[in-house]
Image (cartoon, rainbow, N blue to C red; front, side):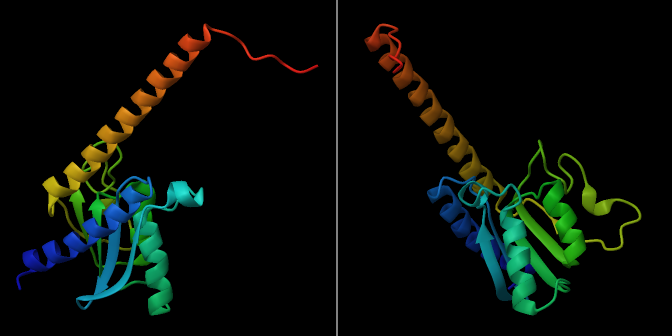
Length: 178
């Protein structure tokens, strides 16, 4: 297999993990850590479920990877993720010393690996990560776009239902007990 084929293979697995996040009502981002073409760790966004703003897919995978390898330095590993990492996750990638990052969809609002800002190529870092973006980009982007369209439609329906309920009540106010 060529490196491009290997990258697509693992990105398809990351997309399966992103579906787990979506099914749980989380932003559909999946990630996995690979070393010597062997799966070391896998995960997906769990910020809502865990009430933890740092529970991004990448962070979950780095934590699992450190435990699996008994070392916080994840040397010679590749992290696959369906969405370009944010600033927090990019910083964690540097600290973990991964060798390579492969991501799917670009994030022009918060992407920290070249689309919005590039944390990974800042001069003076003690570690640099090899980055490849855009692997199965259309599929990864479509999953995210569809998720946010669905979420907006749900919020719109909730607002309409609330407005309808208030209309049926005639603007009545609840009685407060003494």
